[in-house]
Structure formats: C-alpha cells, structure tokens
Length: 200
Image (spheres, helix red, strand yellow):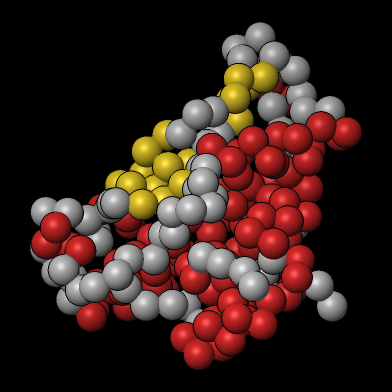
C-alpha cells in the first residue's frame, strides 16, 4: 500500500525499465515471476500463512526480474500480540509496505530477545493479513514490470467510472482479489474506497 492515494503504482509507457536502468525482461522471466506469485497465492488459500510470508520474503526470486526486497519500517514487540490489537498491527504493516521502482518494501513484526521462544508466534488472523499484504506488493511489482493490469482493462475503467474510484492500479488490485478468491480484509476493503465495488 502506498502512503498516498495520489501516486498510482501502474506505470505509463514502455520505457520504464530503461529509465530505471534495468534491462528488458524476457517473457520467460516474467512468466516465472507470475508463477512464483501464484504459488504464494496458493499457500494463502491453503491456510499456510507463515509459509506464504516466507515465500514473499524471498529476495532471490525478486532479483531474477531486477527487483529487490527491502525492509520497511518494522515493529519490535516485547510481548506477544494482544488479540484486540491485530487490526492495529495489520494496518501499520499495510501502511508501511509498498512496491515501486524496483523495490518491494515489506514491513515486519520482530520479537525482542526477551520474548520467550514459545510466545514468538503471531495470531493466525494476523499471519493471514500479513501474507495477503505481501502478496499485494508483489502483484504491484508485476503491474509495474508488465505495464499492464492484472485483470481486464475495460472492466477496470468501467469500475472506475461507475463507482468514481481510483487509481487504476488499485482498482485493478481490488478486482483481482475478488476474481481470484483472495481473502479481503477490512483494511484492504477500506483503502481506495474499495468497499464501493467489492461489497456483496
């Protein structure tokens, strides 16, 4: 999630790779990148959230397409996460994670050394939301790499016009989540007014 709704993540034009100083990517590399993302989606749908989080922190896979995983602002905890704070932590992880210009910036929760090993486990609801946040950032990277929407371009534009929402990349993301059965959290729904077109 970007900190500002005014700066969409989908690039305009076909010269962005050269402008960023990265070589053009082959269809094979882009296809492998897509497959890696889809494998992460599958882990989320299977409820394997810790595996999905690890999957999306794999710098080696991002580097294959000239991108890198960088740490965003993270949170050091001196105790286990209280159940009534799950939404707050998920919001902060989302707000501080981003993807643009060759970098996937992922915010994390880190336990202090003083926390007993058996308590260094995030609630499963928070694991799910973090995994989905990381997926979203990788998908934004895919949007930028291809310069194309994840879903049907005409449907994206129709949704933007009908519900008066934007930017294009975020509407595209909302439609992709819905079409592919990816868990939609209240945080995702509220961002960029997605509740207008994603609520049943």
